[in-house]
Length: 152
Image (cartoon, rainbow, N blue to C red; front, top):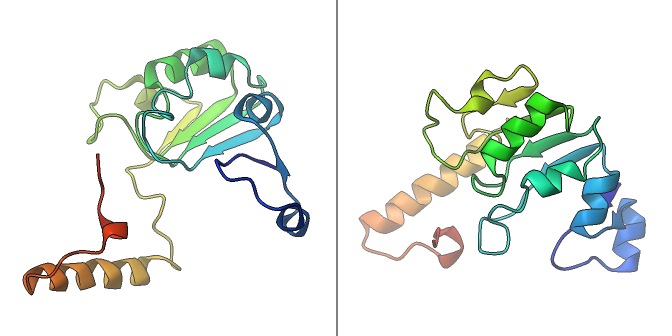
């Protein structure tokens, strides 16, 4: 299994996990499934565009559970229509709520979900407890921890 991250794992961790580091271009060219889990910032905005999609296998599937804006949605829609890649799934969009005319909503080879990918039986309760803990902090006039702040 290939992975890409700004901070490469140690050789020992790679071996233990059975993963191999790859650059983004290498990963896109080799992977059957590309799953995005990165923040939206100047480096990642528009990272998956028509040029990036063209380097992927025609049998590949792209999954975006990162942030809207990492993928150029119009380019993805065109790639899906043209068979550049086989399919896609996305939980995030550049504009939310998603406008009804977003072409990704109407493609048979694209699965869309309403920004709920992080919700699972294992994460729901701890996430809700954490969120309500932050509500309590604010109600007491205390600061929310920096790790919980979304900074644009």
